[in-house]
Length: 243
Length: 218
Image 1 (cartoon, one colour):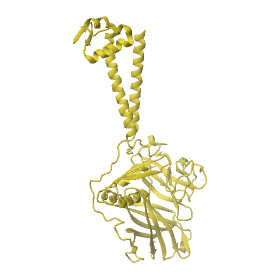
Image 2: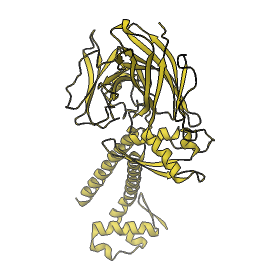
Image 3: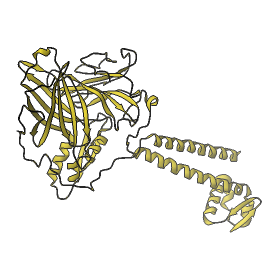
Image 4: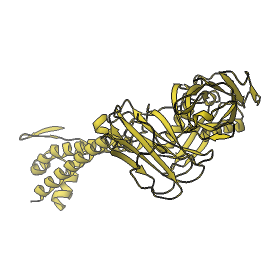
């Protein structure tokens, strides 16, 4: 009798462990795998926005297309200005510091006595940053104008800033990917420890850097990356419209 | 020392003896206390000896299963998502694009609609699509400069986009934070995405089609 109970209990225990083991394997397999790790092996000397003296300049005549506008070492290119069936469409290109999802914040356009809010924008091309080179993104910004006959030049257009939209992934994973593809972070050998809470909040600390880089400078660069915003404004004056 | 005991083999080693003794204690109580590990005693305890190999095998199986459970549970807790696509078109329907790994490589489909507050603070709504998962979803980003309620609807089907996948924040979300809907299968499905960012809420969903708060067809 005792043996039967013993055999039964042992069998049940093993069966339970089999189920638990299978469950743990299935659970593990259901977790998306692997991780992008920081690679600081290819450190290159870079010209960064911080290393360029802060200057604001219009490098070409304001009325021509393309126009280049440089603020704090970041150059924005105005590539096109068109009058469409629904309003005005302005094309710009901007450099992206990493492979994040960088979105522009276009300002209002002003002409005559009119002020028009931006209606929508559409990405038309993108070259992602890869840790060695910065990226470049081009976008068409559209302004809906009901009174088409009112459109006149000169017209003022401003790009206020552009910023990294949080992608649909945990904040720390998003940051880690951006850090891995940021040439400045790689050049400085930056590594960061990151933790996030359920509300999407993030706590980031600098964990490592190249020995040649000062602590405060490394921290400043990391803060820039965490903030994920490149501030302008870049202001353009448009004197010709393509129809 | 090895001795044949009927059809059962007994391997007399220090460790085996220990196991044998353990079985004795558990099954024969005091009788085992006087047991020695002489060959004759093994014969005397034949019923227990018959269980010996079976017991040993069970212990091995238990150890292996325990190790596997431990290893895979540990891996499950410590693996970091890389967002490899875990679903494809119909199997993505209604699922979270982030947890299913569809966000990696996802791009914006068509235009991004600006939900302006009249000033320079702009929130967005857009349609996101994943080629790897062959699915779409809508995403609203709060860029109002303050905490806001936010909602998004991916509209599809019929001639007037009568079906939807929708999401709304139960409370306010931070500036620069996003909400996104569950996925709808097939990236080629004609859709429109509608968004709302508001100081009051929660926002009623699904959001209706409107030229001021929805993207164009994409």
